[in-house]
Length: 182
Image (cartoon, rainbow, N blue to C red; front, top):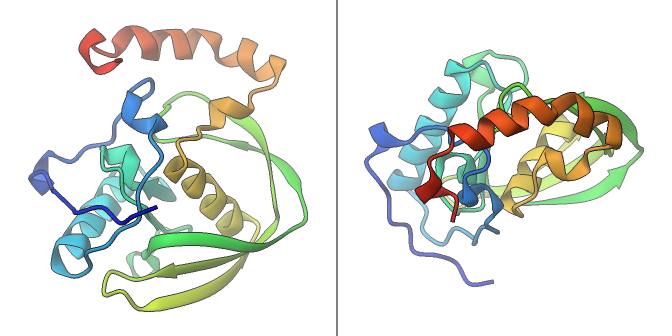
């Protein structure tokens, strides 16, 4: 897949979009331009994630179809991390756990994820890095990479999850402006 030229909105207008916004279902394209603009986007994404006390946020969740996500599982700003054009390797183990999503507020779904993963990515200056993570960090990486592929936690719902979340999903759909759904 070819890299995409970054056309950025004004950073102060970036906000977390909610289901069923169609932007959440788009498969993201690789980032091809690195540097200051990308750093500014990632910084804004980190600020948005911290505002709502999240642990991860992917670019499509702010309406940008870029292979980029940010994360911080401790809440300490010194632990803020950015992954550009990420890939996962060495997925090991499996655990079913409940997950939420900043773009699907009020919904939780039991999702099976690997308990260990290796993240291969680049930073905002195009420097490659590799990290190994377990449990929560591995889960966050898998969740955010799902976003980059246009997949959402609701794609994994069991019948019990569908019943438990039916009303909230209906409310989210009703709250979404009709013009944004197509």
